[in-house]
Image (cartoon, rainbow, N blue to C red):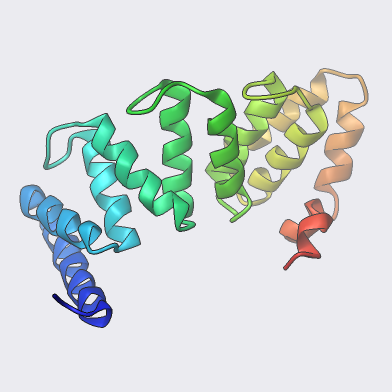
Length: 192
């Protein structure tokens, strides 16, 4: 049995080979390398094989396998895996459809600065998906995503501002002076 250090080194080697195969368009071999590295607990490889399984690239499409690997990586804090797993919960792909769990995973990814997750979380709060409707939280997440260049979030903010009910002022207040994540979420900045 290999020791943990040897497993890590082997997994990194397999991940590197998988990335080289992927770049060369040799997809079956890339998937095999990613799977082997994922089995050795490499987080990036877990994400890569999950993505390939989700999209059916180099391997047969399999939502159950994709959800399994996304979950493994998501639990270790991989922001893209958290977002992908959240989408799987929205669509009921490989997991039961559950907007509440989707929202929880989007929050984890969004808190790491993922603008796509932030934008989707804004949409969920705006429409009350997976929990209560909260325009203030929608504005916060949309504003953060927009500040990172997410055009869809910027459009969503404009649409909220056009609704009236004081939302325009909220949007302008949130957008003025955004410097970083802590400007929108001071309660989280104090945890860091």
